[in-house]
Image (cartoon, rainbow, N blue to C red; front, side, top):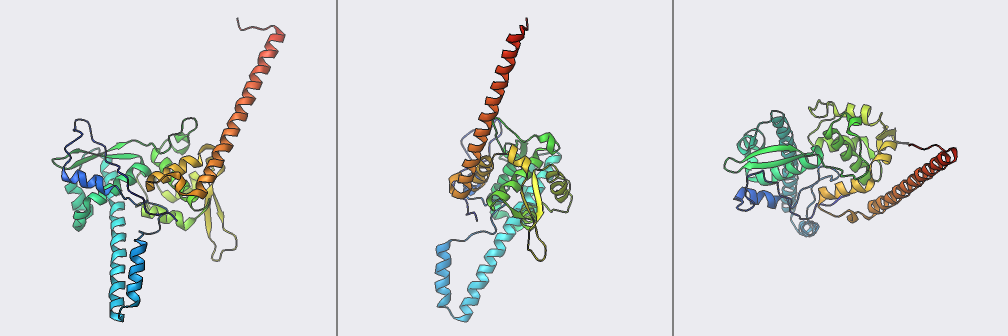
Length: 326
């Protein structure tokens, strides 16, 4: 449903003591590679250029059977390369999170040795995409502070939803920022899928993030249990069987608590950040979010009017009774 993000610089922040200028070659490549970072969810597979596809299709029709097989083999190789790159990004995210538990700096050489391997020439792109996942999903900023030795640290800065007046209470989610990040990811998936998402789509999104639904994760515990027992039971998510499906399928939708506490416009803004676009890029969801904002504004105005009316009534009753606070 969603398209590949457009360009837009999103540089990794510098740690204190670094100069603003004088970036080395790796840092410049890292900043440049962040111009196109695929979303870790909603995007089913990497999209190739449509014009190139048409040209290939026209060429394929004029090719011999052997040429057509060669072209198909190249396309398959590209898809496999994309999948391997996605897998490496997810593995690097998990590696960085595990290393951060020890609060020790992480070097490029460690990342290459234990995760990236022979894809080291793609290091700038891989680390840029990993930084995006860490920022928007887990609430961590990846900072490079030792350019000589290419050293990185993670800083916990969960700022997914910058609500001014109403927020999801983290205490309801176990006081855990990453759990809130996971919930927002799921709500974003549901919203962009037309307000419901099949259970299989949710599990596939987690796998793309390097999180296995039924396997223990040091940030989420058992993700499937967290979603089914906590998010569903606390009414952040609805879970039901889809009618007339054989074999039976189930789906998630926003629960009543999410509808009350979380703005659809904020979630759409979160998705837009991932894709380097404006919320208006998705007109259907944007119109629905505007309507939701209007409903919230009316509900807030009614509540404030009711509070003012009760305050006036209490003041009138106090005057009539001749009771004063002094």
